[in-house]
Image 1: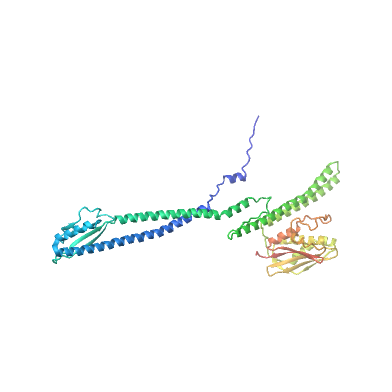
Image 2: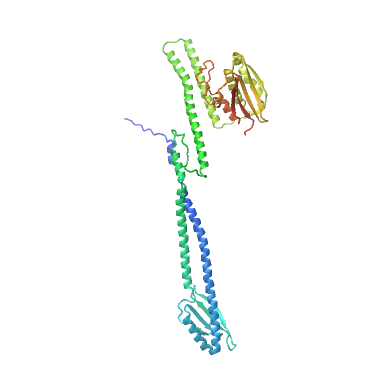
Length: 465
């Protein structure tokens, strides 16, 4: 037996699964690291300045000690030279050396020979961190001066400096770590309302579109976002409800012609029919198919308008002339209803002639359908500046309930759903198309009704607003 393997094509979901997702990051961690880095840099600069000042204090102290001790040495050597010469000088220097550990003294004669040198110094006199100062001692006999060298041990100060530096580094790192931890904890506490909002958002689905976001305590920074989201959800809910109603209305409108087609076809096929009977059935079916095609075409047009398609504007034309052309097309229905028509006003605008004619035709058809017999219709053109105009179609007839006026331009809406209107068939998209054409011309549709007179119209603009 031959077997065949059928492989399903990859779906969009499979493509989404294979696409690399952008990396996410934690606001708390990022803020913690940034503030910790700033703290380390700030503390580092501050403590480096403190260390620099401390180093300068140590250096000043050492220089002061060198100047002070070298001054003492000069005075002692001068006095010793007067009293006993070089022997007394060496004796005094040895005596001072015993009482000043951590120092090294060397005295040279003018000829370069060594007069005195401290024995066995406890530190390296030629390497840091020891500090050195040179001095001169005038000879008592007026001869060439003695030259001395004083070196002090600064290792203890250097150790203190290292300990201070280590302490400052540890303090800087500890301060940065503390700031990072405190910031992360504080940010997590501060972001808890966002987590609450995320949980509320996850709970919203098509069965709970009426749910709105809220916080126990309003937060100034989050409230605009909450208000915008709640406004969005309100519009989504309204649109979803309209979409559900629209789908139901479409199904209802298409079900009738489909049922007629199926019924006529079943009856026709139930027994043998003559050619004339079959022709009548085909003509009736053609009318139902044309009605369905009209509904589908109107729905496609409204879908394009909803996507933001704009009208193509041509050269400026006379609105009154367009109205006369549309009236000529409706002469037969006007005569059948014994209606007259007046055209008042005019305006020259750049617009899409076929679309405007279609809107006018829908308005006239609607007015003819509901006008009282023997009355007169009025098409009124009201200029609104050089680039805009408003067009009204008025008729005398039943007053529309004010509660129905806001919904008059909704799709498939009928003010009286119980009226069958077999004599005036229409599928309830005419005024919706008028509103769409007005939007495509950067205008809007409007309706007024009262005292037995109704007027429905729309505004147009020659250029985009």
